[in-house]
Length: 107
Image (cartoon, rainbow, N blue to C red; front, top):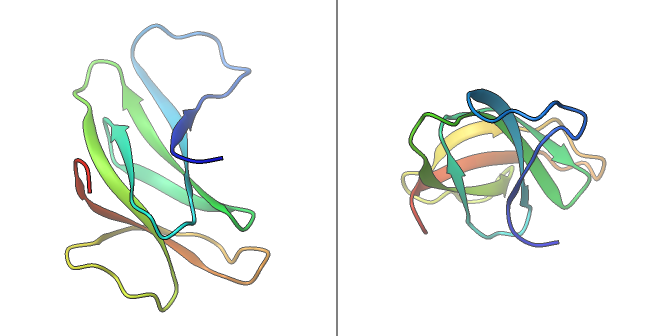
């Protein structure tokens, strides 16, 4: 599995417009990932040892912005300008992962 994708609740009723909470998944792979969002992420969590998921509100009526995110482990060097988004609870392998935004647009 590679890349970034929004995941919707499969049991939810179809919505044609308005506000919804979306879930996004990015790899723990030392790579930046571009995600198109309308609002800031609100929470982050580790999925096993290979993925971090985060949630952000999506508004059909709001403008979209490409934003670049990357996962860092505790103690890893952070690039200049990186902005902390959230810290995951300790993963089953003992690592603690931190989600950072590296900027707007492609890396």
